Amino acid sequence: MSTYSQRNQPLVQALNHALGGRIVSMTEYRGQLTVEIGHEHWLDSAWLLRDEPDLAFEQLIDLCGVDYLGFGDDEWETAEATSQGFSRAADALGPGRFSWAERPEAADIPNRFAVVVHLLSLGHNRRLRLRCFLPDNELPVIHSLIEVWNSVNWYEREAFDLFGIVFEGHPDLRRILTDYGFIGHPFRKDFPLIGNVTVRYDEDKGRVVYEPVEIEPRVTVARVVRRDSRYIDQKLEGGEQ
Image 1 (cartoon, rainbow, N blue to C red):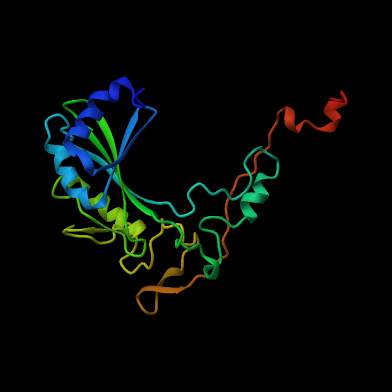
Image 2 (image 1 turned 135 degrees about the vertical axis):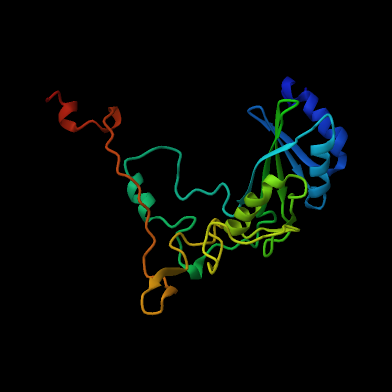
């Protein structure tokens, strides 16, 4: 029995015919088809996805980076809810909340960084999600798609800025959200939530200066007062109003 929905059967056949061995895997979740492409075939697969008549994905909707460091790990047990959620969230040390000397390492993660692309075919009224894992965790590099879909320009700059993913062949690969002198990549899971330095404007020097960060990691988790059967006061249980 096929693992793909009836609606996606024509697209699956067209993808297998056009991309063949370039496809590492193909999965469907809630009607959304995801195709994983090997990094060495990233660019030529993009051309085929755009130019093959049976595919015709002429529009790139989005591109983003993904960091799988700590993927699937929980900061605490989540089997059941308790009334102690605020304290656990505020006190625990999880992704982004750690001492720099004990920051998480990615030595045992073969596929830490990935690039994900969302495509749209207006003619066929189809959407497709592409994913490609990058082979080098120290310097994640992948070919730019800007010559295929020029709308990817700022998306690739954003992924470079926030994740440190280098898009080879991009004509203007520079930071787009953080300051030009910013150190690090904020969306990496080994980057502390409080940052590495404090940025302020120095009146005497007439410029922005960087200083060691002095704040402590903290998480603003709202306290929730639950008025349901799990948290009824003993007085109410005794029949008192």
